[in-house]
Image 1 (spheres, one colour):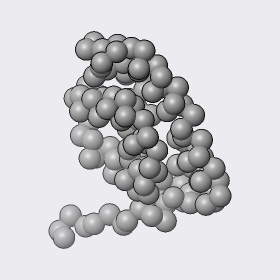
Image 2 (cartoon, rainbow, N blue to C red):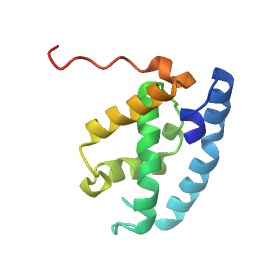
Image 3 (cartoon, rainbow, N blue to C red):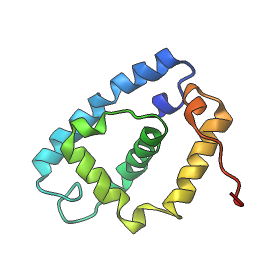
Image 4 (cartoon, one colour):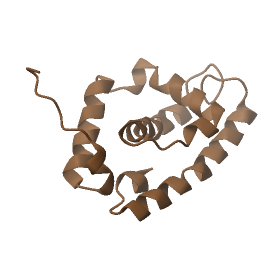
Amino acid sequence: MAATAYADTEVEYYKAVDGIPVPFERLERALEKQGSGPFFNGIKYSLVDAAYAPFLQRYVFLDRVRQLGQIEKFPRVKSWCGALLGRASTHSFPPDEFELMYRSNLKRRNKWISQFIAPERAAAE
């Protein structure tokens, strides 16, 4: 996903988007073997969940900037992502604040996707 966020050109961006299904497919198969969820090891939150949560969170952030349309093809990954992002321990501080910082970082790096990030509104608005 980092390749998507930090692509310098539209061509590089779409090449990176085209690569997203590869790890998602692997995760989908692994989740299928693991059972019913909501977490990787079923009802128990594990180190696997903690390790993947930041990547899935950033996918969601990028999808909100410019729709990637990939996670919808993998229902188990999508459900797992929802469970992880819905868990308070996934977030070190308020999710909305973290997403704003992530967007600000993308904008500051001036990568191709940054053109789709709306300017932050003033607090008085």
